[in-house]
Each structure stands twice: as C-alpha cells, then as structure tokens.
Image (cartoon, rainbow, N blue to C red; front, side, top):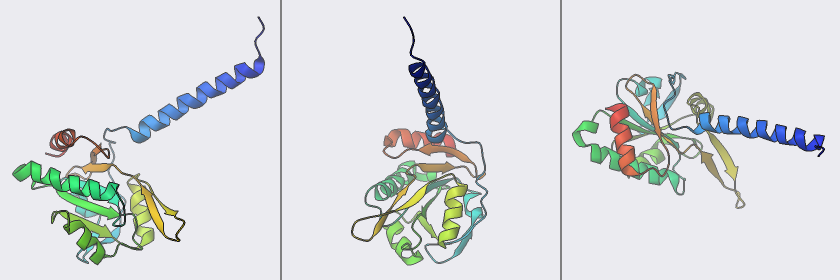
Length: 194
C-alpha cells in the first residue's frame, strides 16, 4: 500500500498545529496563579474622583474585575457575586478590597462608576481614567478588552471575564472564572487571600 505524501504532510502539520493550540490555550486560560507581580505603573481615578495608582493593589488582598457599566450580563452578574462573596466571608473578609476597573473609560466617568458599583456593594470601588492609561493597565495585567461596534452605531466591549485574586503583596494568587460555583469561589478566595 502506497502512502499519499500530501496526506502525510497534512496530517503532520495538523498534529503540530493542534499541539501548539492546546498548549497556548492551556497557558492562557488555566485557572492557576501566574507567579508575577502586576507592576504596570498607572495613574487613574476612583469612583469618588480621587487619584489612584498601582499601590491600591498592595497592602490588602483584592478582588479585581475588568468590566464596564454598560455590560449586559457578565459584569453585573460578577459584581453581584462579589458582593455575595464579601457578605459570605463576613469578618474574615474585611481586609479584602474589591475593584471594578473599567474597560470602557469613554462612558464610565467617576460618577457613573460610583452609581454602578455602589448599587452592588459599598465595598466595591470603581476605577476609570484616560483611555490610553486603561489600555496600559489591561495589557499589564494580561487581560483583554476590545470595542465591538454594533448595527445601531453604538458599541459593546468584549473583555476578560475572570475575577482576579490579588494577594496583599500585589501578586496574582488565582482566578475565578465567570460562572463558577459560589462555594468553589469562596473556597478559592479563602485559600488564596485569607
């Protein structure tokens, strides 16, 4: 039986492509901490109009989410869950700070952010700023955000939906993927941050 050389080459290339793709996806989406410090220096504004920088992520453990106030589902769901986690943790969770870093600074002013985050919990702080500064922070945290125009002339944002667990040392300790079981999420927060 003779082998078709084209099929042999195509099979080999396909196998290499699939192996590389699986490796990239594993390291991109794995639910384990990356042993790095998020040291992207930035100058942003919180939802009370106060200047903030990268030091807000040091000294206390933090829950950090990249989202936006016009988000139809993932952002309000995640912030609702964060408020629930903080309530469930009770006094144990008091040291934890929580942040919504906008990926849509063109619409998310400090006032809009304040009204949005405080509707979920007074323990969540909104962070916004100049678009170029937000892009640097998103890239520095290895998150993702992209504007997606819609047919009506507006836009939505495609963005990372994981909740980042940041230790008091400013290092990523873990991720809570969107849609995680609340008991699993609470367990991760306890083991990673408390």
